Image 1: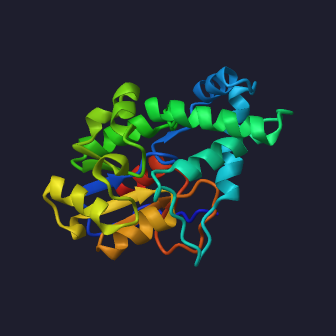
Image 2: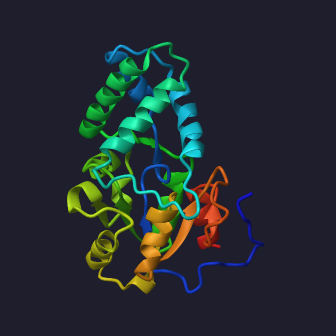
Length: 245
């Protein structure tokens, strides 16, 4: 189980001044309605709820293992996302063949590049950001994406919480490489010791920032990463609860 700590204990002393926050599977999740609509336009009928259930299965199937680092966006995410969308469709009970699913996955990916489909805000996340902001934490996004994250955050009402958005597709640097985190620190005019990164992938969101001296926490709702030596939480709201305790 994801570790829990007793009231009054903190794993975040000294308190960071800024939080660097991942987006996909940390702040926002698949919009099943939108993905199902894209699939239908490509000739594959799936239920939105099935798409969102598939998200959980895929996250379990593709969990990062100790000693096998995962890098999802070295090619801009093209191969990773194509495989993920095709696998999602296959998990939805459709009888279409692999070639049809591959074409539909490519269509979903193309539409995703126009409007990011990771747009379902996690339960409690808007409130968590509001509480963190009100407590004086400076917030910045650091996301491996395709240049669409900032527009998506605007559309779902989360952009006002963040001083800056660092999207790998815009800045040309991909987590876990140091430069993407340094860009965020430079924009905030803070040192690495004053920041803490929170996200869902060990390589991208823990070991990447730690190499630069940035502390980290992991959102791990399915308890997949017990081997990662940082505080782990079921969601961003639980992380905020402890940080604000």
